[in-house]
Amino acid sequence: MIRPILVVGNPVLRGKARRVSQVDRSIQKLIDDMIETMKQAPGVGLAAPQVGVPLRLAVLDVDDQITVIVNPEIIKKIGEVELDEGCLSVPGFWGRLNRAERVSVKAQDRNGKDFRIRDAEGLFAQALQHEIDHLDGHLYIDRMETLDKLQRSEPVRKREADAAAARRAAGETVDEEEEAEEPA
Ligand SMILES: [Zn+2]
Image 1 (cartoon, rainbow, N blue to C red):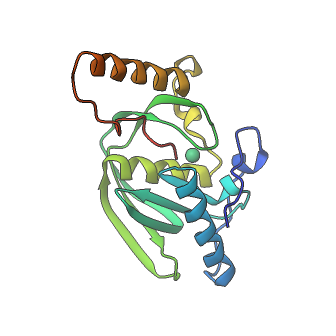
Image 2 (image 1 turned 90 degrees about the horizontal axis):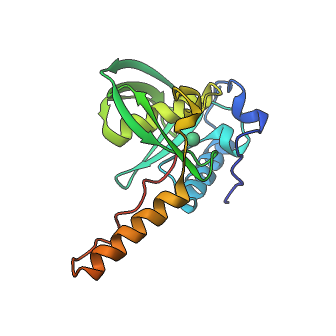
Image 3 (image 1 turned 120 degrees about the horizontal axis):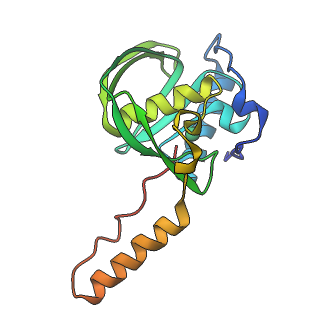
């Protein structure tokens, strides 16, 4: 079942989510709904507070791999990188911010079993940090130096489309898939 995604301004997005005490059937149903909602959006990640459930649980879809993290904790951070980021709960915008380059996370899976993600990097590392932030009521816009740097997505998409059209007119082949990154 696809669930509605809350947008910035809703207080559930700003609260500290509670630990999941037991991964039972109702939690597994919530996980399935969140995966379906994330894919439909589409996004690279979705945290339970984004669908109005204040529990420490998130799903990720990076490189066609679904990851479920229940009660996740970042146990190691390495390095720092500047990244562009968006969020399904802040529709129509993206911004540039700093995040750790690599992270290790401990969590439980969809069966309640403990597991670790060691030295995640790239988009996976970014999405893990983004989703775990959601569980503490933080949005990526809180991590930006200034909201003056917040950009609207549509004009960027239009600029890219215009640039692609210009290249096509010039006889170059254009990869239709080179679109803006999916938000989380
Ligand atoms: Zn988000």
